Length: 103
Image (cartoon, rainbow, N blue to C red; front, side):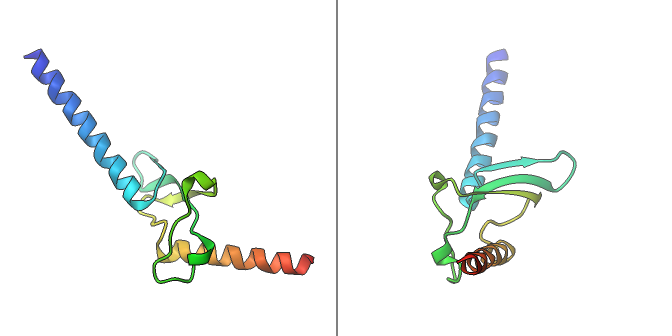
């Protein structure tokens, strides 16, 4: 009986972790740590490729690139959602303006 309980526990644990890892990977999220009792999370995900920021379907950079966004906010934040696209467009436009003004 103990072996069956242990086996069920291991299956439950690996199944739960596997599903959450797949869900995170599907969203492009590298890391997701929730604050207990809230809907706030610390998310890490790759930045959007600059050349795709104005496309209908932008694409995330390769995480190996090292351009990772540290986000603190709603757990349901979408790395390719409208808010994130607008934030990154604003960032890149400001960066270009600053670079042009410094030349």
